Length: 144
Image (cartoon, rainbow, N blue to C red; front, side):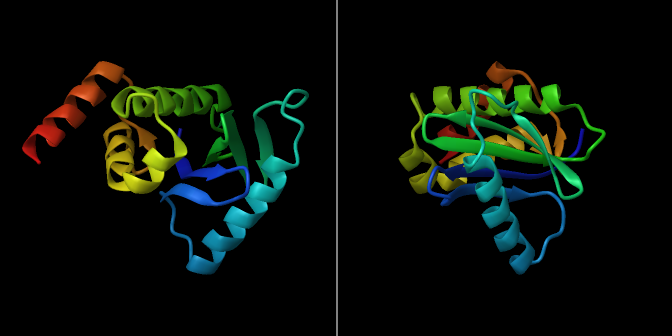
């Protein structure tokens, strides 16, 4: 499974986290953010799945409170694996920040990117153990 991008945005479409594993220009990133928000926010979440085909990709998303976590993957990649990876990321952020909220993502973005870097390498899932990732993050925090 190769994630092309991972975006976290609120219901108004403000991007709170964006990690690009494929080369996109600034214009493409902006257009992608707008189009993804328009598509995701207009879906009825109780009646539709968390997967949708989008351009030449597949979007896998999950809404937690007021935030959408969205991953763009290839059409042939496993959606359930990506969905569970998103859930694992949210669980790690929740334990790391002790009940994470949108403001934690905004004001501690460098820590959030550290969490992402511990889980994913070049868009590939590298570590799935919550305890290993949290221990690594605690070690880095102890060095600061």
